[in-house]
Amino acid sequence: MAQPPPAVGLKYLMTDLLIIDYGMGNLRSVQKAVERVGFAAPISSDPDAVLKADRIILPGVGAFSDAIKCLHEKNLAEPIRQCIRRGTPFLGICLGLQLLFDESFEDGRHQGLGVLRGTVERFNPHPPGKPHLKVPHIGWNRIAIRRSAPLLDGVPDGSHMYFVHSYYVKPADASVISTETDYGVCFVSMVWKDNLFATQFHPEKSQTCGLRILTNFCRI
Picture 1 (cartoon, one colour):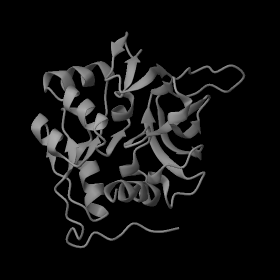
Picture 2 (cartoon, rainbow, N blue to C red):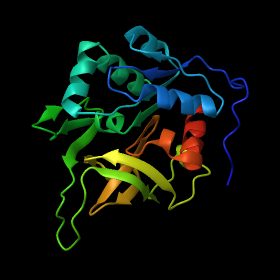
Picture 3 (cartoon, helix red, strand yellow):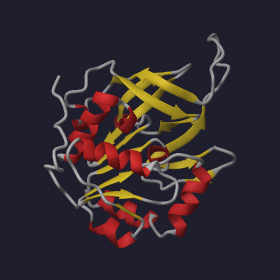
Picture 4 (cartoon, rainbow, N blue to C red):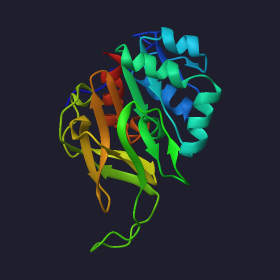
């Protein structure tokens, strides 16, 4: 399997790759992982900087309702939609995946960005006919590749990725599904539509395979 390049003095220095700061992301860990594979990625909450970026990463941890509120308060929601519509390579991570969908049922009912059709729903801790599940889903789990996205180049089917989440996405359009993972239910762990990529797992915490995904994104 191909390995990500070493980060030697940010060999592939690129200031057009932007990590969006909306007050809820694990920003520094994502930035450090991008630097580890040899790229530079500034962090910004400036809507104009988002619109000018050639590649965008939207990370996130925390509650959906707080996150979508922060995106609107910082005037980032529409710039994100515009960038995706015009073809800017975009990577959502964890909550950054969930925010792309129509609505979430986390602590009520909340509208998302509506970039992708579908909902965000909570794991059932008592799935029929299966053992009790701990929620949130935390730790390593396998991905099953259903449709091989460009970000999965060099990532074997069945690779382990690191997850931390209580909710998962249910796309209305099955054609966007790239990988699935089993945790009491077979849930979508990665989506891909044209220039849009998003993962439920954390590539920045997923060691070699996660770094490969980040490398592939940065090289688009």
